[in-house]
Amino acid sequence: MRNLWFLDSRVMIRISHEDGSDQLSMLEQWAPMGDSPPLHLHRNQDEIFHLIDGEFRFRVGDEERRCVAGDTLIAPKGTPHTYRIESAGGGHWLVVTRGREFEDFVRAFSRPAERDEVPDPSGPPTPEQAEALSDAGLKYGIQIVGPPLT
View (cartoon, rainbow, N blue to C red):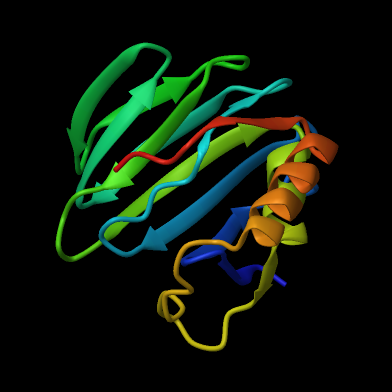
């Protein structure tokens, strides 16, 4: 399955780590205004973001910056990072990683998309859901180190 609902976003796995010999993944993602994952880091892979539509506020390490369609940035492995979608129409972007961990994490925490839109918002996670996300992240080399951007 490549068309997924991942938390409050829609993810289309355009290139799976299994498709080529270098284990590259390219995920296309859509999310509503205000979407912001917890501050986290990837232990084993860099994460590249290429913005297609919308305005985002990124935090990578100690730096915070606003980005818009056409911008590309990297969160090097081991560097805490997150983003928040600031545009009323939501955000649309690509994520590129090498290795299987991030893609496997997304697949593990997703369900098949019921339509080609973002899912209905689920609201803030319960403490149990936040703990499950954190535990799953550790299994896939992702460590949650702080809250989402507000």
